[in-house]
Amino acid sequence: MAPISASKILTTKMFSQLLLLSTCSILMHYNSSEATFQPPQTTEMVLYFQDYGAGPNATFSTVAGIAGKLWTFTQFGTVYVTDDPITETPDPTSAMVGRAQGMYVISALDGSTSHAMFSIVFTNRAYNGSTLQIQGTGQQLEVGSEYSVVAGTGKFRFARGYVKFETIYVDAPRAYSVIRCNVTVRLD
Ligand SMILES: *[C@@H]1O[C@H](CO)[C@@H](O)[C@H](O)[C@H]1NC(C)=O
Ligand SMILES: *[C@@H]1O[C@H](CO)[C@@H](O)[C@H](O)[C@H]1NC(C)=O
Ligand SMILES: *[C@@H]1O[C@H](CO)[C@@H](O)[C@H](O)[C@H]1NC(C)=O
Image (cartoon, rainbow, N blue to C red; front, side, top):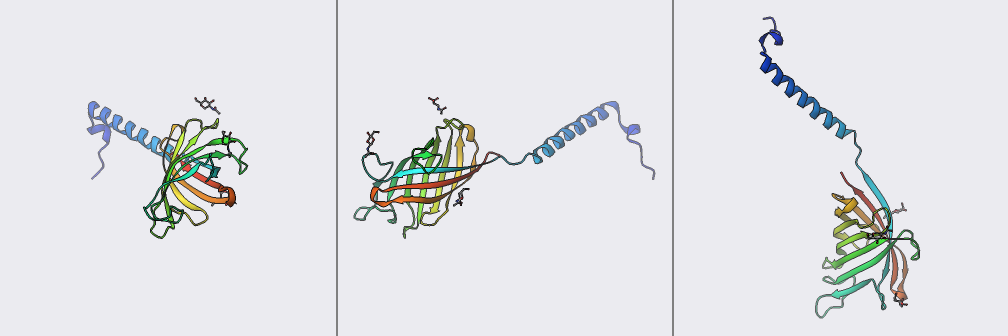
């Protein structure tokens, strides 16, 4: 049987409907192929947390713990609050990038993990007023301990990704340390 030419069986109305449908599908196809050519917007940052654990200007402090236990880094249930300045280089006098504000809870019975709940609040020119939300449990005693970035605000709306921590300097008598925080986020 010979194929029937479409132009012979289509009324004008049907034809225009078909044309509309195919235009829509071309537009949809165009949009989706456009999207596949868009590389994910990945932002990487290396930040330095200036962590002062003692003295009148402490930026990291124990606020709660299990009664009768020592409230330490390795004791399950210890709660810390933090408002660490964040700088551009390990030098505490280098340019300010923002602050790490929130809390940590030692979340494993053996003290190996800590649950982080804090925001990186940017004050530098590029991201002033924007935040990243860090949340989750990480192997706090391991180098490169990883926590997730679950959200963001301002220039980081819809952000997700991860951070990796590494303590790169410790001055035990002053309870001062510098923690490098490598941030990888996507806004797609
Ligand atoms: C604490 O901060 C205050 C106000 O900035 C400053 O005057 C003081 O010297 C600081 N104290 C120490 C021990 O760093
Ligand atoms: C960040 O924003 C605040 C409030 O809008 C403003 O006072 C401050 O100068 C800004 N800082 C930078 C580095 O742009
Ligand atoms: C963080 O980034 C620095 C600079 O790129 C790199 O040298 C370091 O190994 C990274 N640390 C981790 C834990 O990934």
